Amino acid sequence: MAVVAAVPRAETQTAPRNLGDQVLRVVMRAAALTLVLLVVAMVVSMVYAAWPAMRTFGWRFLATATWDPVAEQFGAIPFVYGTLVSSLLALLIAVPLGIGAAIYLAELAPAWIRPPIAFLVELVAAVPSVIYGLWGIFVLAPLLRTWVQPALGATLGFLPLFQGPPYGVGMLAAGIILAIMVVPYITAVSREVLLAVPESQREAALALGATRWETTRIAVLRYGRSGLVGAILLGLGRALGETMAVTMVIGNRPEVAVSLFAPGYTMASVIANEFAEATADVYLAALIEIGLLLFVVTVVVNALARLLVWSVGGPVKAVRE
Amino acid sequence: MSWLSALAAALVVLPLLLIFGFLLWQGASAVNVDFFTHLPKPVGEVGGGMANAIVGTLILLALAAALGLPIGILGGLYLAESRDARLPWLARFLADVLNGVPSIVVGIFAYTVVVLPMRRFSAIAGAFALAVIMLPIVVRTSEELVRLVPASLREAALALGIPQWKVLLRVVLPTARAGIITGVMVAIARVAGETAPLLFTAFGNRFWHQTLDQPIAALPLQIFAYAIAPYDDWHRQAWAGALVLIGLVFAVSLAARVVTSGRFTGVR
Image (tube, chains in turn blue, green):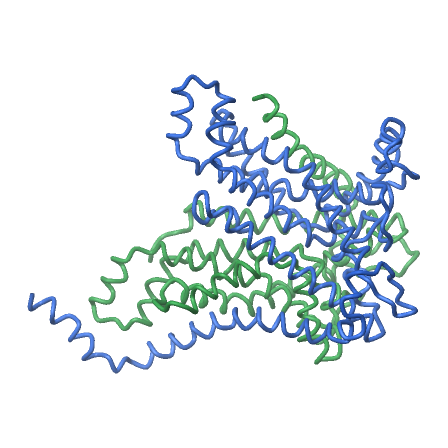
């Protein structure tokens, strides 16, 4: 007992710590504080820079669809619409594929096929977005223009979604390129979620006589449901903020059109295209306000996603880049 | 249903193969020596290269690393070592928030705090934006890897009477070194292809930059500018640029893999 009691006393005796300890502590603390300050500075500087637009347009900014830099009338609706529609279209394509692929990788695939596929999925995530855009302009858009859009127009043309001239570039192209870009994330995170489902779940279902597919459906997917929703939201977070590839294929026209063939515009791509050219103060402030809006939306979506993914198997590593 | 999910996996991989196939096909025929050694030719003239953009990207990456890495690694060390209740939690949470922020928003931030006060686009502003994007990745990987260092190692060093700061810098950090280098490489690979945050910070430049407070060319910016231009020769060069860029990104990612695979690890 005497020895144990002596330990704290020994520590307090050396308590006037040496200088090195104090310096390193201060430096490390400063580094961590920098991170905090960066986020605070980000919010403050953007609100400050967007203030002229907020003051001039108020809530009207979010409720009007006019985007006229010459007359200095700005409304965010076409961009909010474009961002939402392109992202939802992307999820519509990417979610079934991503979760299907994750089921295959986590539950069904022979063991030897998993590492190369997991590696490939990682590679897709490493390709810079400007390269997806390049491919989108020169391969995807012509493909859509000559084959896919005429075919869709001929068969489903009675729906307003598939009417109008086939330009190639437009909302459909943006949705497809986004789907290609987010599907690796959805696959990777869903796979982690499925792998985190306890083995006893599967064994219990199998013991009740369930087939392999029934086991997956009843025991695995249901158990990991909230994690899968989280994976989808992470993909959504990516899609909402994705800039270059979308800018290159969406057609960049600030209009709200029902048809998926029509060109559109997203919040990120209007900033990318017009920011360096915005001369008037209000114009620049309006673009920054759109950036602020994008910031808030992505932060909310990502925070929600993380909570859901963590609820299944603890902090998942694949969530990082 | 099994074959359906196998089909889904195949469809996830297919676009990657298509993109790579095209990139190799179009890029390989367009890359030549001139591409690496020449400046862009004026509009209308065929030929020239992206030497300035390649160098510009390397400079931006070096500057961003110089800005972001020390803060990131020290911050990660703090998150792993600190026994505080509040600051580490907040910093960890904000690192994750920052990681999810679209890169174009980081570009706006860099514009408001660097470009506006300096009154011009510059390499410094571009590097600042890239550093902000790198920071959360570096902080979180460093933290994770420092946590993996066995407590016994720390205790042994402390028991020898070595002051804590020396234990951290000379024992803990070197032990986690290989992993931290991997994290750093992943972060560099991630920002190497970033275009959006450079559009109105580094801005691009068709010539050599003279000093770092001037606009600077970058490979992704050049690819973007050439891809949306109406000239066939520029399109050809955009493919060449894309091939070089992806080569750079994969070289860095592969290097990260080699480091983790353990060949170069080892506690000194």
